[in-house]
Length: 116
Ligand code: 5GP
Image (tube, rainbow, N blue to C red; front, side, top):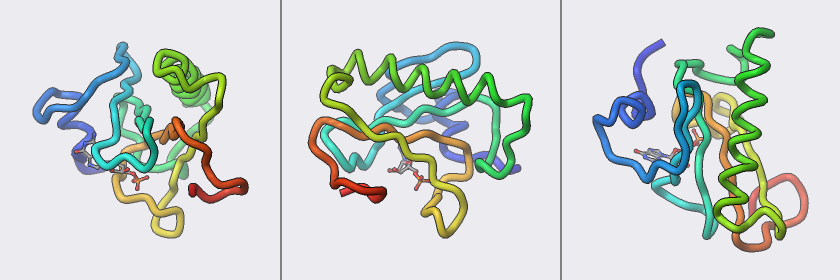
């Protein structure tokens, strides 16, 4: 499990627009936003993909969703709504191998599964 750019963000080696942080989880704006609001929620622990999740990670993943909910509320997009996405491996379009939850909102997204 090699280090990714997200470890550098966690360790403050590169800058990011940090929106939330605690001992286990961090949220920061995506550097290449696909919607007016686009942020990522990551665990500080290095878990490469959804495939690597274990039953003991369930509270951590639950917390990631709750942080997404809180930051979405803080950003003012909760009522209109937003989309949560986790890409896994090549076919899922994953490019950074450190688990992350995308949160997209601030405009209507296409109906259906794929982001518009
Ligand atoms: P993936 O394609 O792996 O699901 O998503 C990775 C996301 O990380 C992309 O949306 C990309 O824009 C974002 N990203 C890549 N490098 C950086 C970076 O250095 N800083 C921030 N804030 N986001 C990044």
